[in-house]
Length: 105
View 1 (cartoon, rainbow, N blue to C red):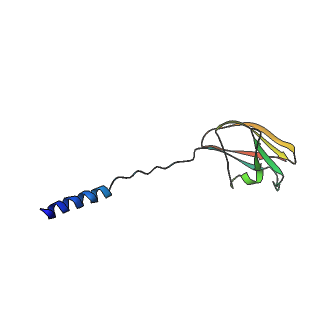
View 2 (view 1 turned 120 degrees about the vertical axis):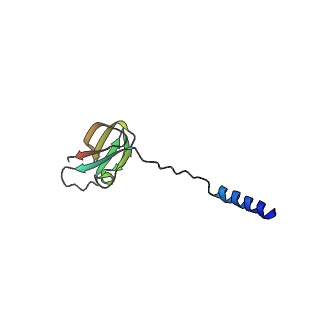
View 3 (view 1 turned 90 degrees about the vertical axis):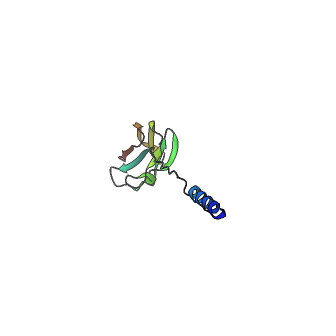
């Protein structure tokens, strides 16, 4: 009888160890923005602003290299070189899309 009880308890413990598990995959569905230059430019002096907030150097977000993640919706994008406005554009980006803006100067 003791052997039977030990066998039942062992089976129950083994069954508890085989509990089903759940795995969740979270995909990044945010919008993105990157830049390219119409002519070869070093990009060091170009600063990007989104809705008036500085996001850093345009060179950080070049097409096929890196994407600036932004919230989907309408935004005003401004690029300045040495404090002078080079590009100003109102864009709309939807979730999961990436837009490339061309800087011409």
